[in-house]
Length: 255
Image (tube, rainbow, N blue to C red):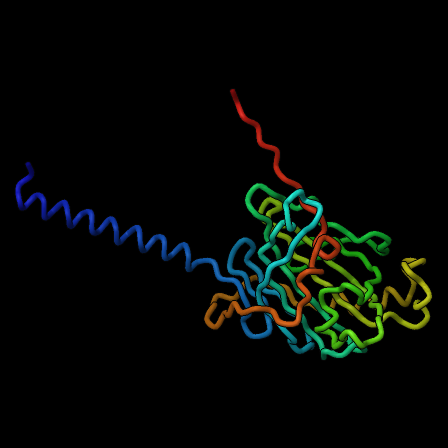
């Protein structure tokens, strides 16, 4: 049986160990912050990034839940999602979107993904990272951002000319998608998909799109990061049409 002095010493040691464990846990928890800091979406790790639109006011920003169909998961595969939408909130003005999503453990993003019938495919570099880029048309029907753009159930459907950018991080666990949108020009209104590529009109649009985003590392000062809910997003439509597809890692069991 230990002496009273030894027992007191052991209790002090255990208390110090417990304090260290709590401090480590608190530090690990506090190290990762994600949310809105001013007009920018900021993630302090996995990846360390700050994204925002340039010269466009913030309409809404925050977190939410997206679902991917076709994964074999009942109700869809749930994604932790953060996004911010910029613009004037009316259908005839440009709009910009930055979004990030994480797949659950055991899943991975298949590719950077480019929508079908897109043109002018290439790579654009933001903050020293290559993003798969392409240009395509998006219809307002069943679009997650229609309400943010000022459309409602009584509005006439519209279509956007879109330049999209996508990149994967963290061994394909995390995906970032950015979109720059303008109302589809009248001379393209009769096309369901873009019939020509690298036209002067598209080149000018793509230059505006490239200049619409500011992507950098997260700032050293992370005070003021908020993690509220992104309003007016039709989350049920924020699916694989926007994000692309995922796969599940194969698991092997040994007998």
